[in-house]
Amino acid sequence: MLRLEPRAAISRKMRWLTPLLAVALTVLTGAVLFAAMGYDPIQSLRAFFVDPLTSRYGLAELGVKATPLILIATGLAVGFRAGVWNIGAEGQLTLGALAGGSVALLFWDQEGWWILPLMGIAGVIGGMAWAAIPAFLKARFDVNEILVSLMLTYVGLLLLSALIYGPLKSPEGFGFPESRMFSESAVLPGLLEGTRLHLGAAITALVVLVVWFLMTRTLFGFQVTVIGQAPAAARFAGFSQKAMIWTSLLLGGGLAGLAGLFEVAGPIGQIVPTISPGYGFTAIIVAFLGRLHPFGIVLAGLLVALSYLGGENAQITVGMPQAVTGVFQGMLLFFLLAADVLVRYRLRFGSPASSPRAARS
Image (cartoon, rainbow, N blue to C red):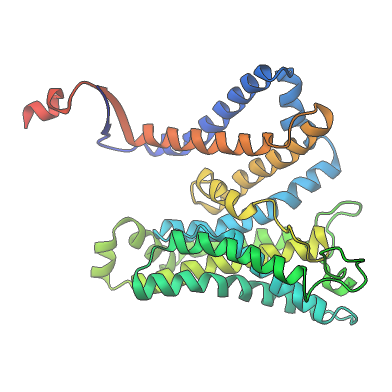
């Protein structure tokens, strides 16, 4: 009989090596999958992982794709460390895009430096407001935040559809479900001429540094760690579990909302029915692949962003189906979870009674 036995101690080195192992296994499995589908595995892997990085424009696009992933994952990681499971970042991203984009549409015929900061504030508030619902229900009634935040994602997407097919639809759009194009003052400035890389990437880098400082150099970061790893000790020390629920959910929601604003004010330039290809859900993979550490999340975000670019490039150059991106991301999560299990447990054969530990007891 095969069973899992907890290890006496978890190797810190292996805990940081498992993401690399998961990436390697994903690449190897991908090569086998490509060969089984009738594609040249070497050519396919090159199209997926190498070709998008061989041009200035491709590197800029990597930054565009990685920006929302890193920003959302950084906020989610704080909650995950504290044991607060916000799974609804996709909905919070949507509400942030709606709130910030609505400000742009309100002043669509005006120009001014103040419009973009006002949009950013509205985007953060929109994401925080959506995250406040599971925060209130969790803190007040101990309702499972996983289910509430996840279900609110689909409510947010339906709200986006209702608004973009109704009040927000452009009167000059010939009936297409999209808003007016934002004015020049409501669009994020570019960082590299001739590319779509925008100011949001620089702001995301600043957010990563701020969160790293908070988590490693302040009492708040210590509270997050203690509440997540030793709730009883946290209560004895006087740390408030309810305050942490509110703080972590609002932080995650605010950053997800800001990411949504960066999408509509950056690459898209208007509100459309599909704002995100699933960044809010994919950011969960990024957070755990980066070991819930801000700098690890940056590397993980770049890798997962490459999967989006590589999937698009493989469709064009090799003729692969669009689903290949989701398959790669799914395999990456599977191997990461499997490696984590083996770091914490060892495989044993035989019944529990036959183990030396059980025999001694």
